Image 1 (cartoon, rainbow, N blue to C red):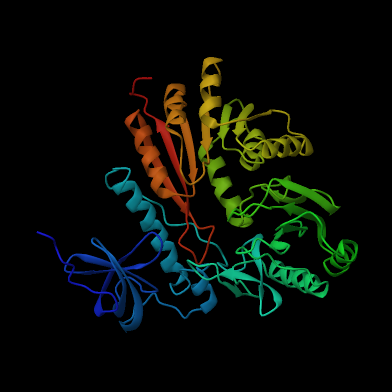
Image 2: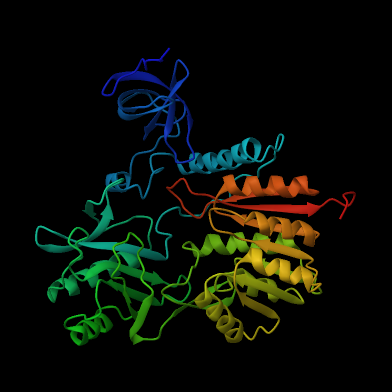
Length: 461
């Protein structure tokens, strides 16, 4: 017998919001059937219109709040809601921190199968606005004029934006200055339908401590008309600029950066500091977008590692060496690997720049290098991992279990995969000692988490 859904698209409904999804959408359950309604908060009674009705769940558009949550605050910027850049701005900051703690706790209990897990209160920031040190802004033509902004959620429609609220305001102003100069020279914007036009993206990176600015022009072609005049104007109008890069991306793709980059002016990197260590950062380099919070997170990782000076440490997924070099200042030796060869080049340069000689960097996958080091008889006292969202490769986990380091510090941008991996380690004899969520992304649903695991003394090695 075919079950007929009792709800229809465009039907107006009412219900209580019982929870938030990991993306921050309200969950309303009507006779056990969940609707996900953006912009609603736990505890609210709402009216909503069904926009999509599937077999197991549906989506709704918020129409009216009948009973309001005490955690609701006024929206700062409606455009941030339309573009999805600030999905939690209607939730008080204290509410956001509690939501992120719950998100981590739910992941470790539901996915990791840890019983009654203790999660620390989320480490929040002093000012959860104007924190981003990097902007990647699409360029499109609207009504015959070059515009910068952000895409409407789930679309390719550009909404012009001048104040992003969660970015360094100097970056916001720099984007407008670059935009206006490019307009003056009538540079064309990329059209993804016809694959014509020159300018695809403007990227601006700014050092939190140094104030140095890098500008990257992502182009659909090699030649930039009026280049000399544009460079001269940029130098004059953006005195903090130390690097101007052209990145060429001629592919029909949503990927922002292409493979070829050229330094048009200045140096091929800008500099910033993290925990007192100076880093050269290139156009392609990964660098945490919230410097003060990243420093607090990395300092906590160092505190958990509790290095005494004689240890051999592994830093997997090391990037340009941000954690590696901080570890190397306190350990005897650090081995590190990263799949991106340019990142390893920069990590080696950064070690030399800071006169750190006890860090060893290799290009390649973590799951390839750890077994080799195991075979070479290298024993790690502490392993630090900071993988991408997909978490640790299963072969790396197996090699890590074989390595059996006494302590593991696991930094993650995805509590779900982190919880999954911690379960594998727990089953192999590790105790989950500490879980600390850290907010690097105020007004959004994203959360970073540090988990600390210790090898049980009574378990078999």
